[in-house]
Image 1 (cartoon, rainbow, N blue to C red):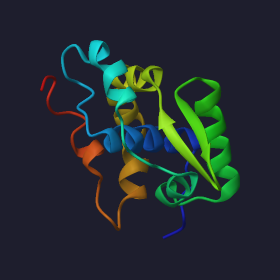
Image 2: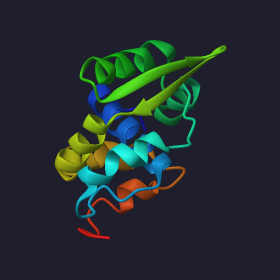
Image 3: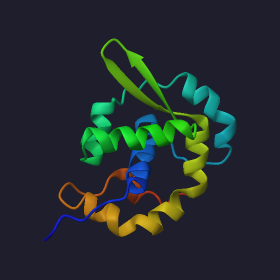
Length: 134
């Protein structure tokens, strides 16, 4: 089977969902927006650019493109610590995902399933249609 090209837009969805998964929150819970400032202030997770590149299984150039686009839109922040760059989701990023995630799941379902075909679908994908409230 030939390798299928994935648009960087699919990678954006994967990255945003990976970051939310690292926060260990349900983005569909009631009153989430009211809780987000506290959640993000106390968030203790470290997702690096290297981790992102590994997750999307792409090269440095594509990783930079995806992260640059997300940062320009204010959906993520890049924090440099020593020799490492950490990727952090913003409040705007979480609210964006809360609003559009199911649409993205429908739009890119085949590509996401193909992307994770050997390792299994991640928790964030399996839960995308479950639990309006928590």
